[in-house]
Amino acid sequence: MKIKIPLLITLITGLIIIVSEFIPAQPFPKVSTNVETWVMVISGFAMLLGLLSLFKVNILKIKFKAPNWQYSIITLVSCLVMIILGFLWGTDKQVGLLGHGQSIQNVLGVKPFDYLFNNIYQHLAATMFALLAFFIASAAYRAFIGRTMESKLLLIAAIIVMLGRTSLGSWLTGFLPEASFFHLPNLAEFIMKYPNTAGQRAIMIGSGLGVIGSSLRILLGIERMWLGGK
Amino acid sequence: MSKIRKPLDRRIIFLLVFIGVALPTMIKVGLPIETTENVEMVYDLVENTPEGSPVLFSFDYDPSTKPEIHPQATAVIKHALLKKHKIICMALWPMGVKMCEQIFTTLEEEGITPVYGEDWVNVGYKSGGAISLKALGKDFKKVFTQDTNGTMIDDIPTLQGIRNLQDFQYVMSFSAGVPGIKEWVQVGHDMYKTPVSGGVTAVSAPSIMPYVNEQKQLTGLLGGMKAAAEYEKLIGIPGTATQGMDAQSFAHLIIIILILIGNINYFHNKKVKAQEEAAR
Image (cartoon, helix red, strand yellow):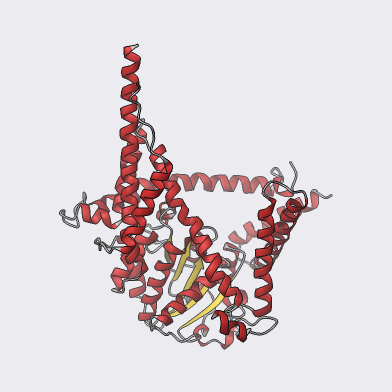
C-alpha cells in the first residue's frame, strides 16, 4: 500500500494534466488549474523541507564530528542569524515583528538583514562565481590542446568566439568593413548562430525525448527512484 | 638532459589573470563596442512598444551572477522607463526580489525617480517555476495577491487592467538558470503568445540561442556583459558593463595567449619525445 497509493496518485495526476492539454472542455481545465495551485503551495513547503534538511544534516555532522564539522556550525549560525533578523525587523519596506528597527537603521543605514545581505552574502556569492575566471584560465591552458582534428577545430572556433564576443575582436579587425564576414564579431556571431544552434537543437531534441521517456516511466510506475527506494 | 618543457605554474596563471582583470579597471583603455543583431532585437522590442504599456520583468538570478546579468537588467529598465512603460517586477528566484530593489535604488541615486505604484511595482517571488507561469497565464491576480510592501494588488495603479500574461506587451527574463528564460519561452511565448526576451550569462547563452528563431520564441537575447555594454551603447547611457568590457577583453586575451603557450609546449614536447625515442 505504501508504494501503490503514491504510484496511483502520480498516475491519476499526470493523466489529468496530459489530458487537460488536449481537451479544453470542463472539468479538465478546472482540475488542471487546481493541481497547478497545489504545486505552487507544495513547492512553498519544499523550501521549508529544504531548510529542515539543512539543519538535520549539519546538526548530525556536528554531533558525530564528521570531517570539516566546524563549517556546519558557521552554516547553521549564519542561517539562523539571517532568519531571526528577517523575522524581527523585516527586509526593505516589509515590517518585522519588532517594526522597522529605526534606531538600528540609523546606525547601519539599512535594516540588519539588508546590511548583511548587501555587505556579506552578495560579495561572497559574486566572489565564488568570479573564481571561475581563474580556474577556467588554468583549465584552458592544460586541456585546450589541438591533439586531433576535432580538437583543433574546436580550438579555432573557441578563439574566434572568445575574441569576437569581446571588444578586442572589433579592435583587432577594425580595419575591415563592419559588414565583412571576416570581421571577428561577425564571424563569432556566425559560429553562434549556425553551427552552435544546430548542435544545441540536436541536444535539446534528444533530451526532450529523454524527458518524455522518463516521464512515462514515472507515470507508469516503472521508475520508482523518486519514492526513495532502489 | 631532456628538453621537455614543464607546464606553467598555476600561481603564475592566476597572477596573469588577476593583472589582466585588475589593470583595465584602473586604467581606461576604451576598446570599441559594436552592437550585434540579438541585442538590437531586444532594443527594438522595447523601443517599439507604445508608451504606457504594461511590461513584465522577471528577475531569475541571484548575486552570484550579478556582475554579468545586473548591468543588462539595469540598461533595459532604464530604456523601458525612458519609453514610459509600466514596469511590473517579479522573481522566480528568491534573491531576484532584492536584485530588482537594488536596481531601482541605484536609479534613484542616479537621479532617475520613477514613482512606485505608478511607474513600477515589485510583486516579489513565486515558487513553482513553470507551473506558476502557467497560472500567471490564466489569472495574474490569483498568483500574486499583494506586492512586496503588502499592498493588495487591486489597490496598485500600475496593475490596473492586468488579468493575465497576455495583457503584458513583453516579458523580460533575466535568468541564471532554472527556472528562468527557458520556462518563460515555453509558457509565456509558446502558450500565451506574449513576446519574451531577456538576458543570460555568457556561458549559458549558447544553450538559449536556439530559441531566437523565425517563430520569435525569444525576441533577441542578451548574453553576458558584452551584450549589456552593447545595450548601454544603444541607449546612449554608459554604465558598469561598458566599464567592465576592457577587463573582460584583456582576460579573454590572456586566456587565448595561455592556450597558445599550452599548444606550443605540447607540440614542442611531442617533437622532443619523438627525437629522444629515435635516438635510442
